[in-house]
Length: 99
Image 1 (cartoon, rainbow, N blue to C red):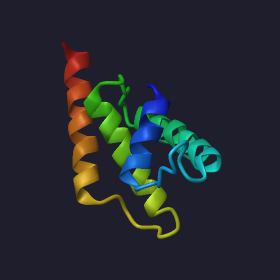
Image 2: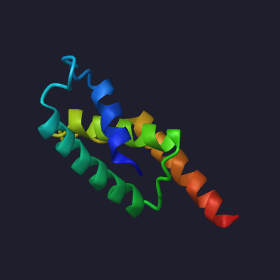
Image 3: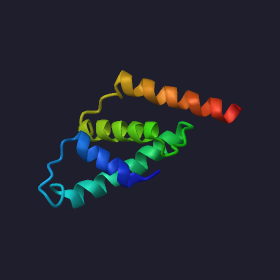
């Protein structure tokens, strides 16, 4: 999985300001998001999901990381739309392994 693509998507999703040459506070934010990406991939792998870098997987990881970032201090459960996407991805992974 190409985390750099996910970092760019996270910047866009979180409306990080582009000042003409770089994104605002890029260094700290990008490193934080890369670590979140790695941790999220590990979490998904523990659920039996191997992300393959497809557009759907990039968007799933982006949405998962952005949701975690936005809710990091709230202690809330994942929203239903995100749980459903993860479950559907798990089902596709299981079906792929069974064929």
